[in-house]
Figure (cartoon, rainbow, N blue to C red):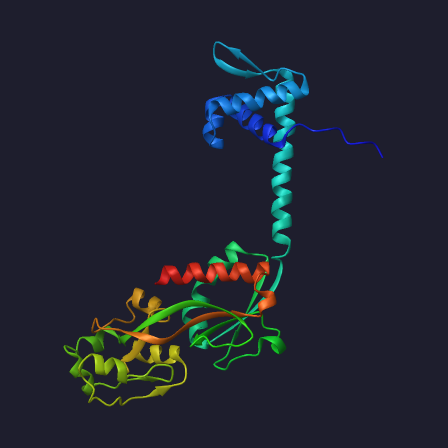
Length: 293
């Protein structure tokens, strides 16, 4: 096998390509965040290594020699090909399925309305959403990631805290028009959600004597829908109520809120935490929750 010819410095080739594209050492230096002198030095190094003059100066500025034009085309094509190759290699491990389990309310109110941005960013990941109010065994279920709402105690798993919410009453604008003071909640149905207790908020608002009386739902998104439909007042949480509040389907009749005793957690198997698909979803969900908050 023939011995490969020794190539010039890749850094020098990158500097030359920028200078050739701009026909200016100054603009190349600005693009590469180096000094003009550094660009000139790298071009001189490349000329010494190749043994040919690459640039010539004219009254109109910097011009490429014939050899410089040929090298600029070759280097430009080679760098573009290298960039495409690196992109393909970096995305190979992203291609494939990613199974995520979460609560029905989080899927319905947070994930599904915003999945478009994930699909646009990672079209090669086949996202599969599994909803359950029960804790799913990640080792036996084939599920890659769980978004869980709880205290964060998941032994034997990789656990990262995502978000702790605020809890506050929400209702339709029509119902809110009848509420002037927290004590007025005694006169409307208080929709119950099994994940949220009314007692802490009522005590904070100075109405500990009010007993919630209204329909009870197992899933948060059903309680929110009942409130949207004017069936009463329920307790909203920062993340799951965000879209309905932003759209005006729900309003906060009172400004007071209390911190939720539990939060959201990103959970996966420890040996899978660094997998590219899981890491991509982790970064996306973190960005998503920061925007909502």
